[in-house]
Image (cartoon, rainbow, N blue to C red; front, side, top):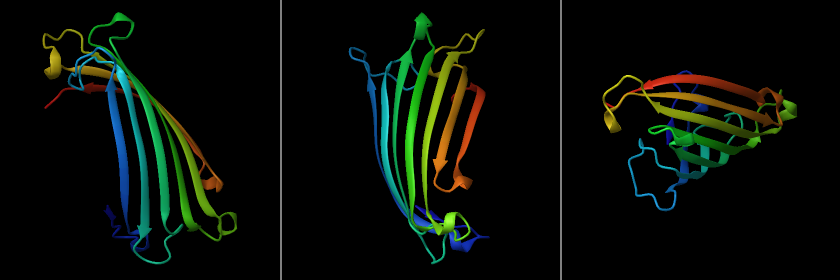
Length: 168
């Protein structure tokens, strides 16, 4: 991956990401398209490295590792066509050099983030289409809590989203 910033050349970088993903259907269920109401476990493990293109980028090289686990529940509480997905992700990011001499006496930045998400997918009412071409609604709740040894990078966020979806 290559990142360029026209107005901030000192932030330009290149890096690599290695990712392992899995999506396991519950025992006894035949494989089905992702938009269907199958149940199963989801996961992802990732490691990445990001290097500055020029000297002087705050933090120097950056290492990041993350682990995401989730559970997809088809037809929750007996609701045909509905799908509930619950997931959580833990991420650890660390710089190899001090971020800034003005922040915590030039300490290397260490950031830990715990994210969560609940995603409810349901068929739109009053539609005659069903299957992969049908309109769908989704309600999504998500949030994260991020902590850092440099307080400037510690934060929290929560969001609620209502989505209308249709495949193209």
